[in-house]
Each structure stands twice: as structure tokens, then as C-alpha cells.
Length: 403
Image (cartoon, rainbow, N blue to C red):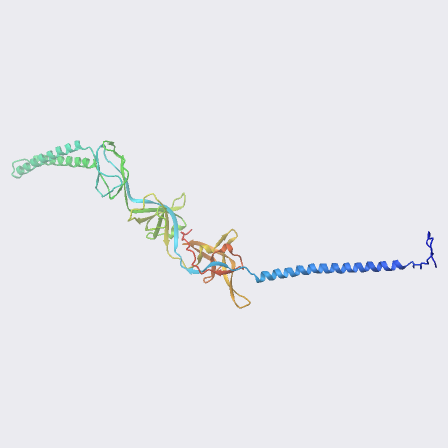
């Protein structure tokens, strides 16, 4: 079949006719081929991404497995079973055994001050002289009367012995003589009152009077304090009073001399308990040879009680105190695959008791012989590898007990 193209003016060429179903057969084959290629590429891309992610995760895990963090350096201590001091803490104040405000028993004008403020005096040392000239005159008069009465009494006795004089004369002269002696004694007592003396050995305080001042009876002249022995007065609760007894040792510390303790003995326990506070008052006597303690000082008192049974203890720094409970880091040994031994820590919750002299009593959680981390807990967590430092452990300051 020959097909002519319209508009052809030249030679006529015969074009073989195309079959009608040629293009419909070739187009579906090409589309399927492109879909297959795209699918293969997509599968390769997804597989590559999945494989890369898996390879990356494997390499990261292998990196961290082979690069463990270095062990944390800590100080370790061994849990001990020891007998701790059984102490009872209280607060109180110091008071002088002998302390008085020196005063005059009578009125009078001060003529002489015989002491220096702040000096040490002995018992009987004169301190202040009051005007006593009238009393001195009365004393001289009474002495003269006593002399005359004594001579008259002697003559009357001689006459009575010879039966010349009556016995009534002897009695009258004896009464006059006794009356003169009574006047002497009274006047001497008044004179002695006008010379104020130190009632005991001690240290004088600040002078409160001046020469020429008229002193009324009871007016303070100066304070006098015996510092050789002091009282430590303190109170304890009704519950703790049963543990105290006269003769027990006490240790007193004051803010003026930190770190220093002064020993004494309980000398008095009040037999009555205060109904307002349910506390009992206790008094201990303390020797103050250096005279450095002063009455009125605030005192921290520790009573030494009989020893308790041994207790499990660790340094206070080894205990981690939190709102969720108290814990320690227990050191454990772990064998590696290569046979070497490594150290790890495990947080262990414990029940704590009293704290005495820088050590905490552990009532439950660890046993004697265990090792715990004492310093460096802030850098630790359960399962962490540790290394024990060879440096000596820092000194832990001792603290008084809390009970």
C-alpha cells in the first residue's frame, strides 16, 4: 500500500506503512524498566542509610566500651567497731564559790581608802577606814573607868578578906568593873566596824567610793571574788537526770578559750525538778588555778557517763546526709575479664545514730571491716570506678556530741 503525502510536487516515494500497534507495545516496557531502576536505587539508598546508622551506633558503642572514664581518686576508710565516750551535753554558766560586794555595817565618812582596784588581797586586809574619833574617845573613857573599877575591886576584896569591909562593896565594885569592860568591848566593836576588811582571799573589782564620801550602811564599796574555785551551774532534762550522779567528771569549755577544756566534778544535784520546765539543776565544782575563768561566763558542759557497748562507726565525712535518707559509698572489688581487680563504689543507705568526736555511729547498713569513701563523694555515683588515694586522709575536726 502506497501512501502519498499531500502537497508533494516532486517525485513520489513510497513509504512503507507503520503498523498501528507498534508504539503501544514499546511504551509499557520502558516505563516498567524505569520503575524497576528507581525501586532498586531507592532500596539501595534506604539500605545504605540503615546500614550507616547501624555502623555508626556500633562504632559509638565500641568507642565508649573501649574508652571508659578514668577512676575517681578518693580517700577510703575502714568501718570500725569501737567503744565511744558516753557523753551528756548541757549548757550553763559559771559562778564564783565566794563572791561578795563589800559594804559597811555602819554609817560614816570615809577618811582613807586602803586598797587598789583590781589587786589581790588576803582575808582580813583593811580596805576602807571610816571616821572613828568619837569612838576612840569613848574607848579611852571606858578604859579609864575599867582601871579605876579594877583598883577599887582589889581594895574591896582585900578589906573583905580581913573582915574589915562589907561584901556589898565588893559586889558593887565588881559590877562597875564589868560595866566598864562591856563599854570597852562595845566601843571596840564599833571601831572595828568602821575599818572595813576583806572577808576572804580574792581579787578586788572596780572601786565604787571616794575619800570624803559619807557612806551609809549597805552601800557597795568594791566587789571581791575568789577565782580559785568556780561553780558550773547547768540543767538537764528529766529523762537524762537518771544518768547523773554526784562525783561524775565534767568537762567545761568556754568561748573565750576555744579548744581548751576544764575538768571538774559534779558536787550537787538539785533534789527537786522544776515544774515549769521539767528540768533539774546540777552544779559542778571546777578548779581554776590560772584564774582565767570568770564568773558569768557561758559554759558548754559535757558530763562523762559510763561507757556503752562497742558501736559501728565511720568518719562524719563518709556519710551523705540527704532528704531521701543517709547513705555511704561502699567500696567493692570487681574482677575484669583479663583477671585484674578493679574497685567500684555502690551507694548504700544506712541508719545513723549519734555523732561523737568527728565520728558517726552507724546502726544499720554496713559491717565492721567494710571500706567506704570518706572524701570525694560529690564526684561519685553507683557503679563508678574508683582509685584509692595514697595521700593521708585530711584531719577531721572533733565535735561535741549531739545528745
